[in-house]
Amino acid sequence: MLSVLRNSYQRNARLSISYFVLRSVGSHHFHTWLRKRFLVQERLDSGQLQYFKLQKCDFRTTQHLCIPPIMTLLLRPVLHIGAALMGRTIKKWWARKSKEEKEEYKQWYRERRNMFLGCFGFYGLMLFTYYITHFKTDPLTQRSRFIIFNKEQERDLGKRLHELQLEIYKKNIVPPDHPAYKRILRAFRRLIVANKDLKSMRETKWNLTVIDIPLMNSFTLPDGSIFVSLDLLRYIENDDQLEFLLAHEMAHSLLSHSLEMMSDQFLLDLLIAVPILLVWFTFPDMAAAIVHTIGDRITKIVYELPYNRVLENEADEVAIKLSAKACIDLREAVVFWATLRTLTEMEVLPSEIPWVSSHPSHGDRENNINKAMIKALEMRRDSGCPELPAVDPRTKFYERSAREQMIHFRRRGIIV
Image 1 (cartoon, rainbow, N blue to C red):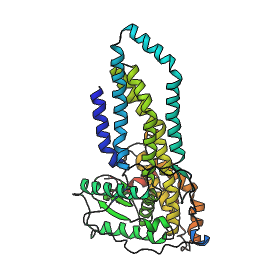
Image 2 (cartoon, rainbow, N blue to C red):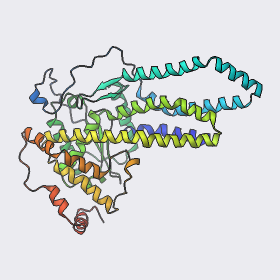
Image 3 (cartoon, one colour):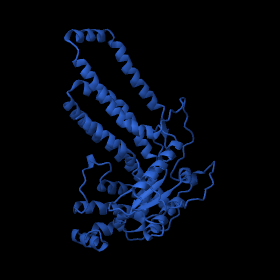
Image 4 (tube, one colour):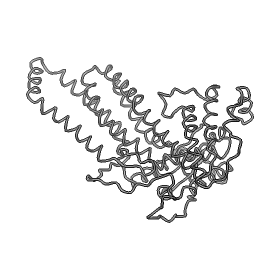
């Protein structure tokens, strides 16, 4: 059972790189089209910023101790396996001791119990100190979050992941002269130009890669590389919906969500290393493996997945602001998520179990964007955008009967 656990974590170590990449791109044939450097202004007036407040300073009394991202990816399985092996080794060593020897060790421990408790307390204090000294305030959302990597490491990680994804999808990369590629690229450029007043938007070296795979997906890498699958275009009805999805992926990159998740999960691994050791010391191997596996699943369901859903909602919120400045009809974003929700209800798409998903349900995202619509349309008007069509696409969608929806989706080629 221990070998099964070890193999599982080794496999997870290899897959971790792809996991934290879920958003990205570039292509062997893709040339970086965003060459023009926007003039970095030292002062931006409030009219230019409108909806984003740039962080003025980040005062600290303790210097950051940044850890290479690749090291954290490798240390994650090492911490789990190492704690399990140490606990198992101590358990076997203890089992070989006679009753008299065990009593002697117990007495030795009781005499030094305060010292052991102090060590555990010091370990917790070090982690807490490291945690509070590595908070960074995001300039777009003004939210403080724990990140243990710097910008240079972010770019290096993004480059490595970009190369890895290009290798994985090398046979599926759509060439730049493909009509779908040109369509996505135009939408991509519109978002960048419309939000060029943001320093983070100007400093990011954006790349786009379109891949031909039978999977409705898009993802971004830490370096601003975005991957979009051709299959996703089947569910997108117009360029407004396309631009919102691109804005969502761009928001993940601007907010450094992948680095935030990596930092958070690395700290969590450091915290649970001791409980893992105690589990493998206390229980027989088979029982310890079961408890360890169940504990991992509970941690994922109770903490990791909800945290990821919070980041997805935050990316939607920022995407609304990016889209409003690009004069997108944000009502179409509601229609897109309503479409996916309806297709799920029709069992065309897999059913969703929200509490075991890394993303909010389609219906939740539909409702959240609907709730933000009044403010979003105000943002759009304040950006000097032209008037929207009088006919609300949401009304047209919601007024269709189930049969009419089925016919509509068949005409679009979503349902065969």
